[in-house]
Length: 308
Image 1 (tube, rainbow, N blue to C red):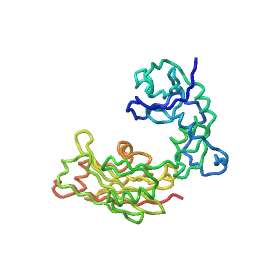
Image 2: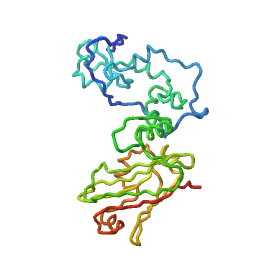
Image 3: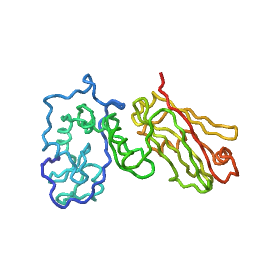
Image 4: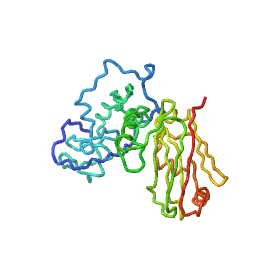
């Protein structure tokens, strides 16, 4: 027997606000990274309105996230999402009655009839999506905000590119340069002492875009490794329109790397750990430094260009 009593959550709600796992989403077509600004796609429908009371019914009272099938309820009709059910030890967070295995099919059907705007509407996405397709779209929406590319701290700031550029300059005091060529110098008095946090970041503006040049030292096994790589402040499709080269050398030798900048959609650690950049082993770095090999002196030069 299935119940649907639209009671609101009042007391006894556990302080559990972590995001639940989404279970058994209805299957839909594969979605690529799309920002729905094309009127031929999902244009905003003028008469589409969703009563706030209905949307509130689809909000889990424990984690406050939208609920997806299977939606569970107690014998009194109080609902909660499948991700939170095991966390409340089979007790309704509203009335404390035993939950059992009652599924709220009526609310699931109501959700299936809804069409909602993308939650990144304020960032430019104009798409309207069926309730059960909305979450999947938002995971790949090209208008979703970017995470701060600053690698020196666990920065949680998100935003569009202009906002992040200002944030890097004002809050992280990152060096900003105009132009498509660079000359990066790295000096360390004791090359045997390397911490994972030893790094530098510079932002370059060229071709109407912004690029992040990372240079850092980190421990790989028993020896330090030095690495330089470029990330594009934008989406992956735009990043592929550009290429860059890096060069380091000394004592009549040099190493050259050429590649495609990675989008900042890919985290700093993901790019670094894939070695997608100019990688210099310590012995080679000391050889390039010259002298008595007791001080690291590396100069990394490079340029960025747009592919035709």
